[in-house]
Image (cartoon, helix red, strand yellow):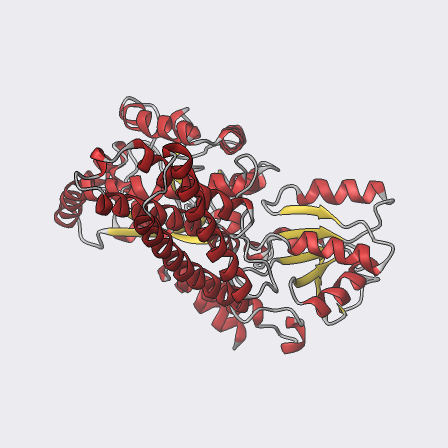
Length: 517
């Protein structure tokens, strides 16, 4: 019965949307032939993959952006209200103190860590700190005008501005705090890890994590299964390191922790080399001597629920900037290109029987499976959801309209919906179909670093696409070059590089008659 059910699910998987695939993955992970005991004490009630958790982590940037907009809007509004001739007629001795007060508030909010929402922090204490910062900004503005003019400032406008800013920030941060509390309760801000090594180090870490409950240990993997127990402190041993490479749990893992003796240098190097093929971050756990050091190690593992606003641009801030870029440009592109998409849909409908859209399961961020949308370019009865047969020149499966929209890449336009949903980006490694083959071999098996291209969301276009590596991959050399270009982009990614890639995509694609698409 179970096998038949699994077969039915496999046959119908291509019809599911992204949320359906997520539910299927979560169901297959929680289901087990050995019953509930295999789920372990840390299994979350709600499964969130790395991309979804990343969205929660980046919320701190949205919080700060909202605060900036509200404080600056109130500042302009009050300046307009207290100046008879409008903001442009406002004297510098009045405008500068208000502007300085606003920047003092926003600067203090960031420098004092009021966007960290630390675990265990009391909400009234946080709100009191926010109110104190707003009051401090108001006092700073008043003092600055008195210093600039040498006279007593008119207090009415400053008092009104301070009161409105205080109320607004108080309300916003009350909402932010409640959102963070809900995310913590749902597990969205609880890091999920797997341990490699069924050792005493793993046992100690699991025991301490059970007491703290700020880390989820989803499972243990060990190459020495013959000597390994079935579980450690209730956490199941799920297989060897090779099993981890293809486990359905991988998209839900934030970090892989090597819980083996660091003095076993050869084994550490071996495992690190093998696991580097995965997109997940790998950490070596050095066994602490006492409880204080063990807690410090666990703090480091659990510390990253929300992104940091301090220091130079890091991966979190770069991801936030990229998401803003995707939303703004993606929404604009969808509006501008909607007439083209409507005409394309009409042409497909008139050209051949079958659906207008083609959906295909593809690799997303961190091995997540996503459903990518395209305009159908092949006959409906010849659609290849697994890309087991790659497209060739004069492929008999491609329709007349299909040849046109493939050669101009118009078939990719529905992926703007994937971008707006957050499953894809405008620029990134192109998403490959699940199980895509190069010749008779699955493409992912031809290059050891293949999974490195999943360390960033897939894109509608990318560095590889404008460098000539697009379309079918017919040899191991083609796969190697595609992966090399994708990894190069991930290491170099920036706003300006993305804008340049988008700018040259259309002329590069239209000018290329060699690539089969």
